[in-house]
Length: 377
Ligand code: UD1
Image (cartoon, rainbow, N blue to C red):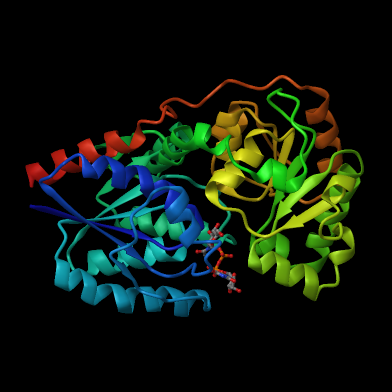
């Protein structure tokens, strides 16, 4: 039996690992275990995603919870080590760029176990982002680097990574999106939010998500963004599923005045919502006129859905989304956000351009390469 262990920890990991788990199931000679670090533990950020994605419950949850970066990373390592010693996988698969990704990769290589990194090579070139540090270090530790877009291949080559380690396979997040898009369209979220749909592709609302420390931990930055979006929301209601960190800060900084009263969604404004599950968010996103976000994954999803996306950051590690024309980098400056929103709303045609290999088949490609690699050992 081939033993493979995959690790997830936080919300954006679940939709990346789900198609890999599906593809691994095709091979009875593979024994696969899924470990959840417990970095995200709220039902709305974790368990609901397993249900929506039909992802089997993890074999083990390390229950590390929230803490400072050092403590969280160290706790994952401490709790992961005995699991790896006991199971002795031939390879550990990690996805994305969260603290659990790096912690699991480091624990594995210290035990002489190989690591495969899914979503390797992405670079924002901004070391103030914790994810950038996680990405670069995880890539440095990995034997197999599975890359989602051409820029990732170039970044790794530029860093001197031997080309036999680099595998351009496409985007597993898009595998999940394409698999679930139809099912998501049946979501009751439209009814729940009182959104009228006239049968066209887009409805008259926008979606906002914010969770990056650089945007939500600084009261001035958060206020600038909310003020700009509140102006847009006078004409186009904006639904705002709130990450727990963002909700806490909006309340703590006294910025709740920018949000509509709960239940007043149909009257417009920025409408606060609890975090949404995978299918409800996909449905809401797919029918939106505009999405404003600081998430990396949502920039990618918007590209495939053809929804205009304004990225509320100064950079992106996913330049393919900009090259395809759906994504614009607008930062946190209110004038820039407003000008970009106005221009995006003028054009109602949806883009159909997709980066190469964002075709729903990245996970089978990954599993084929994993098998070949392990058989050759
Ligand atoms: C983490 C990832 C980030 C990813 C994001 C998606 C890192 C460094 N960051 O950020 O890359 O884009 O997940 O959401 O790994 N909290 C809860 N419930 C939870 C989890 C967290 O209330 O289930 C709150 C806690 O107050 C916690 C805070 O959110 O301190 C931050 O959580 P944490 O996991 O440290 O980082 P995220 O901001 O979620």
